[in-house]
Length: 112
Image (cartoon, rainbow, N blue to C red; front, side):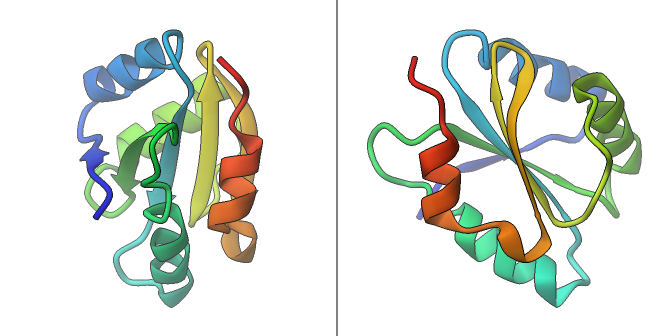
């Protein structure tokens, strides 16, 4: 099973953004109460092959401020569920709702 690091503070978010300068990372913003989020999460954690990006997640019910901070910092309109591929501190690709698919996420990861 894929290891996902949960972001609980702005400092956690900043560390993830900093890590994206070394290699692309994948972020999932999701709700624990939404079936569409559950499907998106299943697709997101499919990124577990060698060479796939490190995985991070924000549960919006538990860290709404972090979710808002990331939307503002990355210049991405907040939606849930939302998967974002980050490279060099910027959103390289954004997938919302039913568009979150393992293969599409993998294809969107920029070369390092």
